[in-house]
Image (cartoon, rainbow, N blue to C red):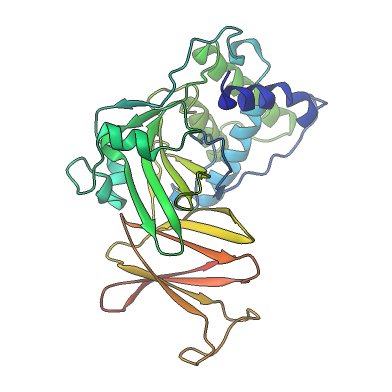
Length: 329
C-alpha cells in the first residue's frame, strides 16, 4: 500500500472521530485557499477551490462548498462510497495522457499550451515529479517547471479525476445528494435555492466520482531538497481562473511560501510591507522593505519570513505600471 492509500484510508476510518453523532448538525468551514502540504505528495483536490478560482457569486460558492464537503465527509462509510477492500494494483508513477489542458486554464496560463515553449518530454516529466508522487492521471502537454529566485522550484500541470474512486461512483453521488438535501430539510433551509443547486452541482462533478474532472496542480519546494508541497484547484464547470494567490504554506525554516497566478501582461511582482504593518516604511525610503520577483509561466512564487506580517503584492507590467494589487497575510 502506498502512502497515498494509507492517508486515504486513515481519513475514511476517522469519520466517526470527526462527527461522532451523525444525526446532529455540524458546520464544516470551507477554505478558499489550499495550503501547500508536505510530502507524501498527492494530487490534491475536492470540493474546495483556490483563491484564484472564482465562479458566480462568491458567497453562494463558499456556502455550497461547505455543504458539499460535509456531504462527502459524512458519506465516507456509506456502502456505495466505500473503497474496494481489494483495490486494483496502482502504477508506480502517474499516468500521462494526451490532450490539451482545459480552455479555462489556457486563457490564464497560455504557457501550458501544447505548442508553448518549455514542454517536457515524458522522461523529463518523470524526473521532475517528486518521488512521493506515485499515482494520478496527468495531461502530459501541460507539465511545466520553473525556478524562482527566493521562491523555490515550481512544477505545474493539469490532472484528471482520482485514482481512489468509490465502489459505486453513481450510487455514491446519489447518496451524497440525499444526505445534503436531508441536512437542508432538517435545518429548515430551502432545497431549491441557489446555494443548494450549486452544492448539488459540485457533487455531480466531484473528482473522485467524475474521471473527467480536471484540477490545476502546483507542487513547490526548494531545489535539491527532495521535499515538496502540493495544492490542487478543482476546475469545476462554470468556474474560471483569475489572477491572484493560488496556494500558500510552510517552506520550512520559519518561512512561508506563496504561489499565484500573475495578472495578464505582468512581467514581475513587487512585494512590500502592507500599510499599518510593523515593518512598513515610507515608499522610496532607505528602510522600505521591497522585493521584485519575476513572473514565469504566468505564475509568481516567493518565500517570506513568518514574522514578515501583512504584505502587499503588486503585479507589474514591463514599464512598471501596477496591473493588480493584492494584500497577503
